Length: 424
Figure 1 (cartoon, one colour):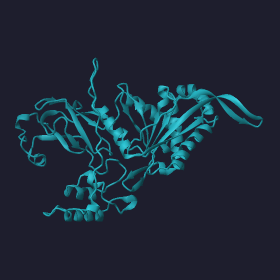
Figure 2 (figure 1 turned 180 degrees about the vertical axis):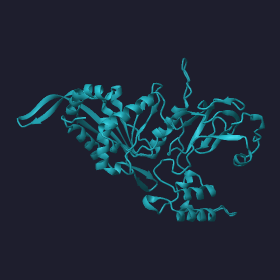
Figure 3 (figure 1 turned 135 degrees about the vertical axis):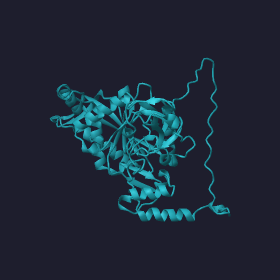
Figure 4 (figure 1 turned 45 degrees about the vertical axis):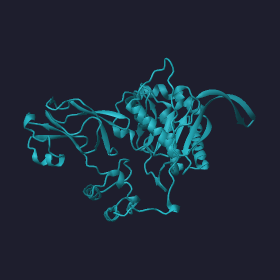
């Protein structure tokens, strides 16, 4: 599933217990975030025991079913045996169908490394990944050391609930946040009620969470991209003939964003309580609308390490597979900044919602020919130019108006100052 995936939901078993399964035959469908995947069987045999049912959430690395490689499901006497014991006592369970063969060695965000020793101590003490992420690290780049995890375990044991309830002083008591009451929705004649799909529910929850967590502010800049537009028109046919694919504006926008992030690295951060996590890698997500109306955000990993040709190939590949619902779960994880192209729908600007746990997102609008005032050595003139709006939404907890505004202005500068003699 990829290093940044911690768990998956089993959505459908494609075989029943007792069925024969061929090697590489689809065995189970799983869902992680917004991606659904079919997991093929690594070997052939009889599906002797299913350990998790549809709807169960399973940690990465856990055994989900047993295949009897000898073809004798009836003799696989493990129906009442706990998972850990079953691995040891059953001789006929030759193949373990697992979600991922890699050990759980990193966080679910992929940005905080845990050593095998730390992970072993955490597993032994029953510390889950969510709890492990709360452990303060004193190692390099905030990594959790052996001493950190042992100190946490010691404090965790000491903090076990006592028989005496602890009552806080009146001055220390916190009032509950005001409850939000949803309005009653009347149904009128002819109305149709449509149940949300799983992905749409995830999107809805994520959007509400983002607006609740982050105070959004949006800055706008209008950019003159005439030179960029004409340059692309000049080279696009030769590029297609040579590379076998189109060069769109999206990789160009991503290149400008990555350059601006290098100039203003505090845009490439996340917030954890009262701590700011500065991201080392620049992983740019790009919002893609699917044919079913859902939105998915594949991530261009280490975008700053690619040239424009590499960005173009990566963007085209991710976009095609995103629309065909063929992305792997890891390919929509680990983003540190997001770009969304509202211009693709003819919109001139938008106010995008931050893709948590990031702190900023940019929407690029449609490129349109407009009259604009140009300054020349002979005076101001009005000319027809290719213009577009950039909309930059950011988390006002850590990104002030000055930083948010300068960042979007810098992106516009990179687009406006395009080298018309650039060769790919």
